[in-house]
Image 1: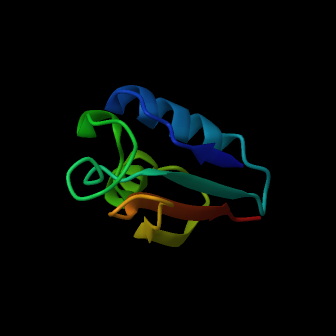
Image 2 (image 1 turned 120 degrees about the horizontal axis):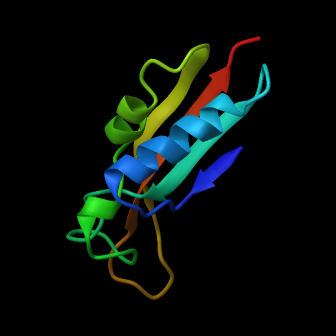
Length: 99
C-alpha cells in the first residue's frame, strides 16, 4: 500500500497512516513518501507550510504501537527536479506487516 504526499494536519496524518497500517494483509508492505518537513527552506517544490509535511521520525512515531509492523527503511531522500537549482527533499518510510 502506498501513502503518497499526504499533506494534512498532524492528527489527521496519524489517523490515516494507522488505518493504512491496519489494512495491510500479512506480508503486506506500507510505503509512505512525501515532501520532508525541511523541504520548504532548502528544497524545491511542495507546500510552503512545514506543519503539513512529515519527517521519517514523524511517520515512525505515528505508527508506534501498531502491531506486527517491521521497519524496513526510514530516511530523508533528495530528488533532482528538472529545471530547478535545488533538489526536492523527501521522506521515505517502508514497513512490512509480519505474517
